[in-house]
Length: 132
Image (cartoon, rainbow, N blue to C red; front, side):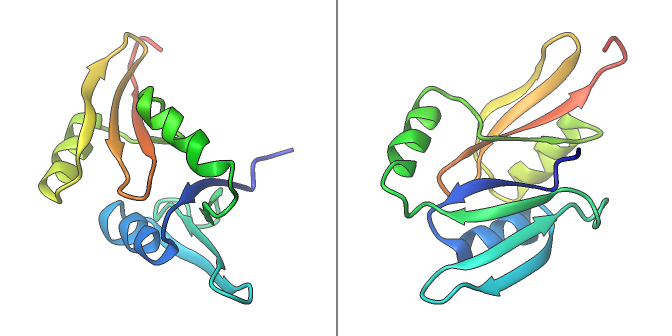
């Protein structure tokens, strides 16, 4: 068994697609109309185009917004992405205007930082350290 697709709920799929591709650097894998206003949109890492897909899921279900808002209010990320160098990625994203809610923080076995994805979520980036 392997993880094929995971997702984040987003307020606006077009905005999310732009942020996740143009700012974060992911690649669009699928953009399939579902009838009506929603689409099946997935992105993948440019470093692993055949890897796990991230679904940019519309937040239309009534339970989603209160749930995601509660996570954001408590500072809990809805997704975590691995990077080689958190400090460098933090600097790159800040230069692009990304707002961080947690700067790079050394937690012993990992270094993490958390940012606002502008789509309703907090996202964590992590770097494993030599002691992990």
